[in-house]
Amino acid sequence: MDFATAADPFRRELLAHCYRMLGSLHDAEDLVQETYLRAWKAYGQFEGRSSVRTWLYRIATNVCLTALDGRTRRPLPFGLGTQAATEADPLTQDHEVPWLEPFPTDPAAIVTERESTRLAFVAALQYLPPRQRAVLILRDVLKLSAAETGDELDMTVAAVNSALQRAHAQLKDLTEDEVVEPAEAKPLLDRWVKAFEAKDIPAIIGMFAQDVVWEMPPYPQFYRGPDMVAWHLANQCPSVPHGARMIATEANGQPAFGLYLRGEDGVFRPFNLQTLEVRKGRITRVSSFFDLSLFPRFGLPSTA
Image (cartoon, rainbow, N blue to C red; front, side, top):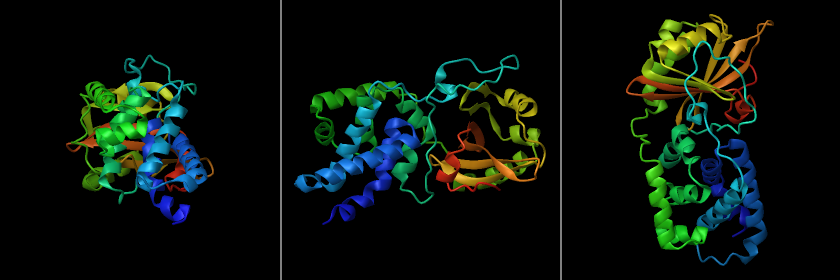
């Protein structure tokens, strides 16, 4: 079988794997390319002792570990360990921080990809040392055995089990089982679009949980609670009533929207990409990403 026929079916899942490891869509795309280049060069020596899929994951994981050497983790503002912003805190951007990026998920993607690319999960992975991160992903997400994981990472079974135990201890407070899928939240999301395009702040905050978090990388400040988010929207958000349009997409297995603001020429242009976390019928977290190069990667148009 030629290389393209054997390897191409795994490109999408390898992209998700590299994203979990790096927390960056842009870096993941580059590392998948590097993985396929290395695999193509070595395909003549591939002896078939493992499946092509397992062989590609071994290459991709080691490419990711090399890329992570010396890098700092990719956080979201809420994960910086700082206090929530107040009216007295100026809103400033920080482009020196390598922020966590969203990942475009297909509504038809397999359940494993959707669950294992949740923003909260990928953000939590960033706190793990790279090798622990790899062990957790290979064992818990890809369901490899301890022996298979050891073969992938050149580790003993005992070392794999120890790394997995430490990773679980680090992530013990992370629960994703109550996150609502976009299709299940459609009535709420329809109300969200209507309220946001009208800049109806009471309607917007009426959909929030009491501990809602609003964050906006590359701004390191974040807001917590409906009252502070309402203050931010009223005083710092540049949208005006009926001066915004939203186009639905999906990021990290969660509802997402491309937000467009109307310019002086009447054209609606990209402003940010919103991702929403919904639990028990309430919006618990809004992460708005201001990297406009993400729009085409999410299938979003240049104007609305």
